[in-house]
Length: 292
Image (tube, rainbow, N blue to C red; front, side, top):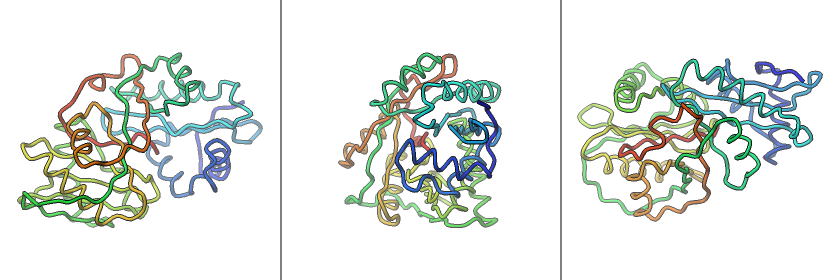
């Protein structure tokens, strides 16, 4: 059994593994696989048995943070420790580049939780996944909500301004994600105050069904988030899912107030020595799905 870096020629078999493990017919789209691999090609792996793909894993870095997943192994190979090999290869690479390394797993997957625990991952706060729906909203701030669907030079200037406060306040970088979202039929809603971006929510198109984003630290941050949520509920179609890690308790409290329903929960696990701030509560607004 060989561990190899993934290439596009592996995509059809990766989609087949995805279908076999997650019963998602017809498996991941080519565009989704390309976006996941492009995010960090040095850490996208396949396990090969005589050129047959028996498992795959992806990882992603966002500034100081990295997460592993999605990861899957064909059912008939799941006792062969292929997942362990891919996780160890991923953590070896990520340790050289990141301060936070984690992953997420469904609570019912007790066997996976035991595996990750044996590899040095420890439980953090759970991630609650909400269904975003429309809600009554009274505008309290004169915010402009821009809806971006393609990349222009003006958008890049806007993204540079967002990147500046993301780096200062959250040690994050999303520039590559912004480009991936817009190239894969996604949308980005940006809240602008006095010609400056103060928050955004993105919806992944082919990349992910999840809504994610950040709001700049300021006195009115919860109102900015409400304005962005209203725009998302009004402008986006299809089931809208937003995963919020419970450490961001202000966001959890707002979504409870808005009566958004929790549709599933994920356990977030952090690697020993690479958990940092993720074991602490946080007053910020950082909504980042660790699911690809």
